[in-house]
Image (cartoon, rainbow, N blue to C red):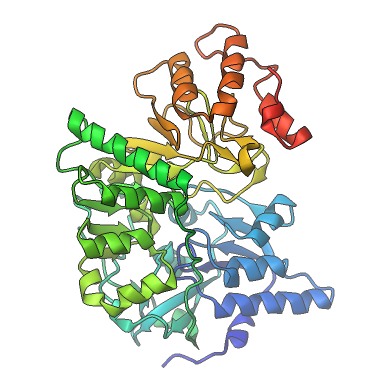
Length: 492
């Protein structure tokens, strides 16, 4: 029924200035062949002195075949809501591409509201496609239902690397828009409220590109002493909260961010006998979760993607009956929805790039100006959490950077949303504390030893006020790093 296309033929539909949306969330579920072909098309145009750039909408970050290839080809006009490849980061920090960093739960609705250009195309990776327009996603959903509905045309990459038997793992649901919006009827982590596929009008599908390409999720680095200690501290804090009666003995669902620290935290929770078997309501399901499911420590996980190594994905696919009873993959408008986060009472655990002594968090910018990746879903979860936790190694660059400074160079999460800060050195509980009390708590509990005295001096130098800040020296550590390459050279 559908026309069979090569990736190159599919790419020929896309022209300069088009807004193009892509399935997936992180490198899971992202199309690979068509975006690479679009990048080659851009290079051909550029070699002829012609313009070729497209607007790029995704779920979150993507793989090298999408963000990487398009950025290398200088083919990105604008990009949202999140990215993480070296090439795209360079493009947006040089001004070559425009980037608007967004809370991941908001993109789909803001497109429906008409706040941004409507996508002309949606490029979808699927494991199954029926004649009546049922698209079954692969290992990541992202913003797929809204992208498909709004796009004028759809191109499907039917990827044989993912089994058709994934049908039934997804829960596809789009909220209504105001003023007709109703509550999202998710009352338990395992509730399903939608369909197991994305339904589209078959006439919108321009064609099908057959592929057999693995996900491009990178392997996680092994635990080191710092990440292991952070994991232990998070686990200890939560066990103490259960004993104190501030968390129910039955425990609460966990949300955990992306990366090696998140993997370490989940591993530590699984190893702690004081932590009950638990559920997860999160955006990404990572490697450690698969092992915890097999051991029974994770009872169920709701997410937007299986952001696991290919080795772990093979484990899932080799025992799909088991994992389909333990995992549901939803659009990020559901997985990251603040309404559901507050209803379920999530314990949220996210990573800070930088924190200041009052508890403000910078998740995105280096020295306040250069974008690293983006805010991702951390804001979706943090503000509505039962308990919001941020973790970070206390230093970077061999100790030349302190992750805790007098004042964040950029603020993504204000002190009002941050309850707990944890580094390898300890746990700062910021609940019910004034700014001065928070500052002392963070300096004494979380700061690396080589930076404690400098931060004590800074705090003492600040004029006494509700939030004591010395405007002459609050960025002294950043200045020292910029000028000498080492924050330890800061003078207070």
